Image (cartoon, rainbow, N blue to C red; front, side, top):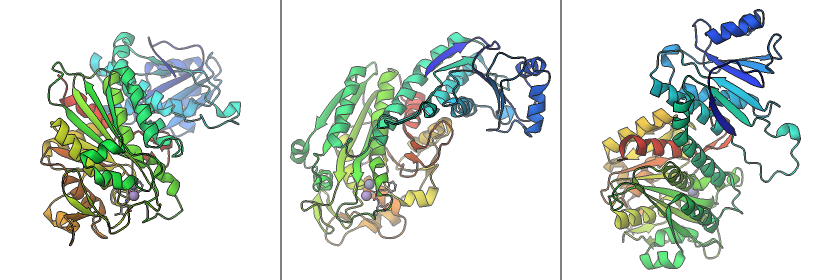
Length: 498
Ligand code: BES
Ligand code: MN
Ligand code: ZN
């Protein structure tokens, strides 16, 4: 998708998209269109009961008096509430409507319906572009019989704005982030026969081209380090488990204390010997969504040359039933030295994270750690599929994450933690067990992880509900969302760059 920023002028080809706010007078441009079409715009808006509410769209095809193929009028919601998210959804709506419409070019006119500074306008323009690009994501490489009419036609998005130069500058970093989200979505969408731990690591290695340092530890090296809880999860798999370690050194002082991100990368989760039911098991290909988001974040930081030192660590395993697989009842020793009674082999994510997180704090002594994991079905029951669960031992970090999520449209909700939950994972024969019983399942999972954090400021994001969208929403098509990349990129940009 080609993005251009242009001066506001009525285009004479392709499609035109104009936003208008709820209950406000039509913009000058819409008045002009109405004049040229001899009143067709106002008639159409009235006939469609258009009020300007967010998400409303009225489409005029082949409007008489104009050279354009079509004009789309999009509701922006309340004028005083217009913000980055509204700008993003304008771009997303344009692409959702036009991607396979036959149209090749669209001009989206950005006229903020309230007074904004030049900087804000440039940011909004970049958000329109980001919404457009993110909504255009497709994963078609395994389709061989697609008809021409099913393929995208839209190739060019012009964004008409007061100062195209400023907008273009703002777009540079927003584009790097969009590219990273696509990278994450590709990893998550790939089928599990193609994307297993070594293949994931191989794709991450390509990020060396962006300036990342990438190391990959195999099973032998992890065994030497004592990472037996991570390794136990992979015992039933023909595929070798991997620990992926990525470093971005963008701060002035390359030795300055880094920030760290850790991802659960179960490339397929059958449940192991505690096997899952058949229905819907295919969804467990996205059980590496946390690792994909961490890798995408590193892609974004390197892509926009963020002035920060950051570490990304992913535990990559496949959880399979087999003669060599771990059994319910096994006791395994983690790298931290703590022992775990594995009562359910389907509670495997926390076992992977236990060693990855211990390794992370032990080797890098980071300022903080944020882990991302498709960890529990219970978080989907608690929060639904639009909000991820946030667990943290640090209020400042938690507040910053909540704010970043809000700004990027990747919502979080903070969940409780504490001793009353922690005691639920005590085991009669080992230091802890890997399940907490019927109740508070997402919280006991977080308590388990916290036992490997070693007092570092830490947050855990349970993204089991948000890594995969059952329906398109905003700038995310149905499927892999890339949730977490933008949220964490914003966290870094707002607080940790020098
Ligand atoms: N990967 C799953 C969690 C999951 C469920 C992710 C649905 C995405 C969608 C995780 O490994 C798991 O199986 N968790 C169990 C834990 C239980 C055995 C304590 C669960 O949630 O049922
Ligand atoms: Mn599982
Ligand atoms: Zn899992």
